[in-house]
Length: 322
Image 1 (cartoon, rainbow, N blue to C red):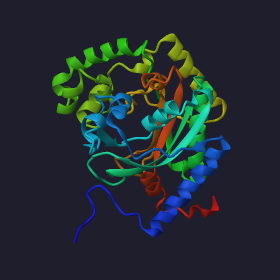
Image 2 (image 1 turned 135 degrees about the horizontal axis):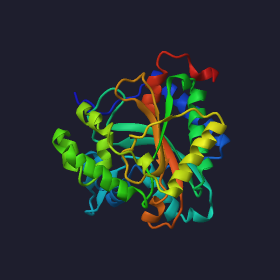
Image 3 (image 1 turned 90 degrees about the horizontal axis):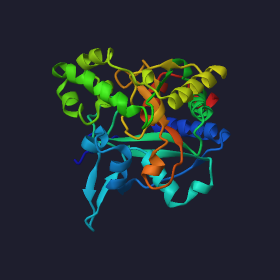
């Protein structure tokens, strides 16, 4: 008997009904904020992801499903949604339709070690906002995400965490300070962090090895080295969040796994799923549209994992009452 490929799964009717309820609630919440749906291809030119996600990211280096099609062109299954949405935004000339609010739902693909809540084909619900650089846009995005969790009935099981990654002005000098610190601790870092430290030292801050986590607790923090503009922006984000009663926790070690993030980054975490504690994450990527050839258009977005949302809902009452 031929069985399914490792790292994927069938979603049978009893479970798929819950998926449909989660997706329906997402559509209802996003519609309140005037978001429309986009459906992008499951595969794109590999160059799109290497340029957008970053050549030194774990996704590009180790996790993408990449192959040559019959014409010899390198194609990759999409490992995340933002790059495709940015490509569509530029290709269809939507720079005149700002602000542009869009959401997507669908499968993504990464060659990771399968475990509870993490698969090689996984599904995301994501939102992107193009055309606004003000702090209130960041807060609106996070408030919408937390409204979604509240509508699911799990807001008491999640925590919003917040950080700033600075910008091309303040990040390079911080990167130098961090690299200097890590070089002094190099022999105590895990093999992976030693190998990628020179190319992308910020990734060491995200390592899950206990020794590395202990080391980075005393490392320089980006939040303490922001330029004046980034400091003003992040202060505005925190002030607006507090003004509307949006609860959050500062996490100065949060870096995210994608190279395109700038300034505000955030995660929604839970203690209910073991090691896979992030159920949604996102941030600002003000330079990505320009990097992809579409002009200086600021943007911010997030993605939530549907598999982890459904796991979080296990044991709760039916969503039909929300």
